[in-house]
Image (cartoon, rainbow, N blue to C red; front, side, top):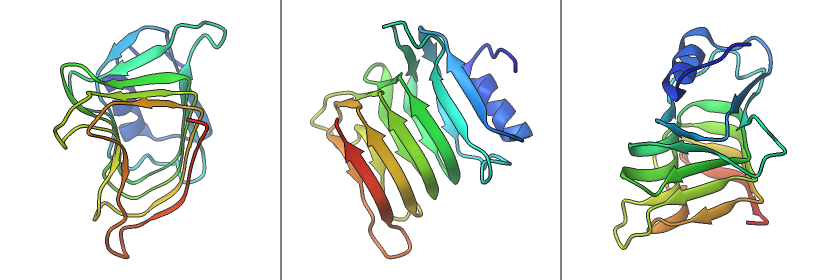
Length: 173
């Protein structure tokens, strides 16, 4: 294992190196500024899982992922990703989306997370977003999360038959 200075370092390492076993990234309970942009397929994630969580499970303080603009988390062509006990905060600055599904994804879970977006009467703000034409979203679980803000809180749009949502579970939120 190793330490990473920024969210960008995590993304760069995953994109260039991939994984060869289950991997856990533990975020310190502080504000981490940046976009967790996982838009390049991670080598090895079809077999292994990646966990994003806070480092100190007993602390009430949360690790906060906060972009200065755009989406806090972008997922495209990803699978086996698990987010636990994080605050995904797109409610400040020029941020527009908490979690943005831009391509095919499967086996994605958010548990015990706060997913925030700006409260707005403008339809460009979302806590969670998946639009038509962005590929299959399969096996998404959102459990025991606090979701707040956005013009749309959760927007999962299947659209045409090649771009659908399947096995979606949203519980205890």
